[in-house]
Image 1 (spheres, helix red, strand yellow):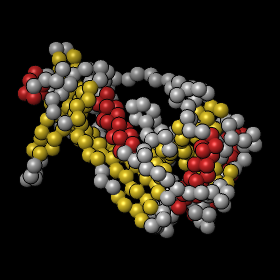
Image 2 (cartoon, rainbow, N blue to C red; image 1 turned 60 degrees about the horizontal axis):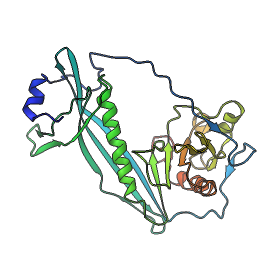
Image 3 (cartoon, one colour; image 1 turned 120 degrees about the horizontal axis):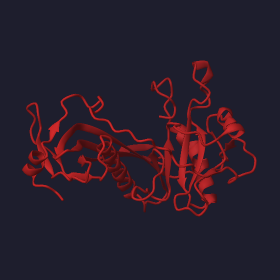
Image 4 (tube, helix red, strand yellow; image 1 turned 180 degrees about the vertical axis):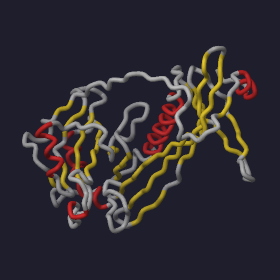
Length: 310
């Protein structure tokens, strides 16, 4: 139930936390979480687990769309409902894209989406709220995306703001679902409903938070040269609607000696995702395209002081 504007903020004695959002909340709940094991099938593309190179004849799409989003917690707040806490946050999410026309050698920054969110836990739902711009500014900040969850711990509002960003990323990418000869590259792993991207969207995972290749299979990551990839492997059970094709590739330029620059052996390694309901033959073709295209748009040490996966 959405409360009247005055009733919500007054009845629940809502107060903004006065310190910066980088500090932890004063009340912390902890829950032990054990991530579920995911099935990994390494015998998908080829039996030999050797580096793969894209054939010289690999056809490339005319256009690429790079999509990325950012979220920000603007301010946290707490209140009370009897003896129970009410936790929430104001947040902002922004999603943008860069459309690259390879034939015209042009890149265009597309109009971004910006949404302002009020996220609350405990099943409480805040009203849409307008806040005057401070410091002599003109206008108002309209927090009109209202999100709520039954969970009521301090992390819940941040999780909801993250959900809002993922939803907007999916919506942004889906605008181009019917575009011919275009591949969408979405920052982060591919997600499913309600965050699913167009079928030919590729997930681009820069951070290796989990290793999917164990033992001898993981050795290939150290062997990859720029523009080489691992064979495709499958994440998820066969027949599962959440099954994904995945592979690692090394980004960066072949002419740059990473070891001479002091970089570690996994410098430039990224993981890429493709939805598992895409035919494997098409998935292999897309993986080969990424071997060529991703390094083309990677940063170099002489241009940007960042890793080639950015």
